Length: 180
Image (cartoon, rainbow, N blue to C red; front, side, top):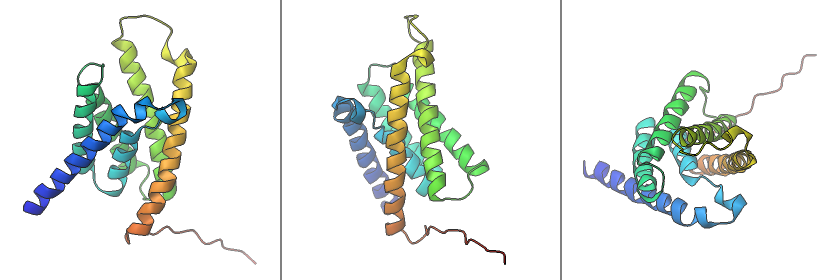
C-alpha cells in the first residue's frame, strides 16, 4: 500500500513538473520549438508502455495544472486530454494491436492531429469572434506540421530508449523469404 501511494506521489510530482514546464518554458520558446507538446507526448508514451489508468491519472493532473494556468475556460485541457486518451485506447485495442515502433509513430502522429483538430474546434465553437474558420488559416496547419514532426521525433527517441531499458519490448523484423 505504501509503495502504491509513493508511486502516485512521484507520478503527481513528475506530471505536475512537466505541465508547469510546458506552460512556462516551452510555450515561451521561438516558434518551431514552442510547438513541442510535451504533455501529449508523455501521455501517449504512458498509455503505450504502461496502462490506460495511469495515463488517465496523468491526464487529470496535467489537465488540471494547464487549466488553472491557461486563459481558456476551465476544463478545456481536461476535455481534450481525456478525449484524446479515449480515442487512443480505442485505436490501440481495435486497430493497432501490436506494440511496435511503427504503431507508436502512427499513434503519436494521429493523436497529434486529433488533439489539434479538437482543440481548434472547441476554441472556434466557444469563441466570440467569427473570424475565418480555422481550417483555412495557415497558422493552424503550420502548428500541426511542427507538432507532428515533434511527435514523430519523440516516438523515435522514446521507443528506442524504452527498448534499451525494458526487457519486455524487443523489436522484431519479419524474415524475408525467398522462393527458389
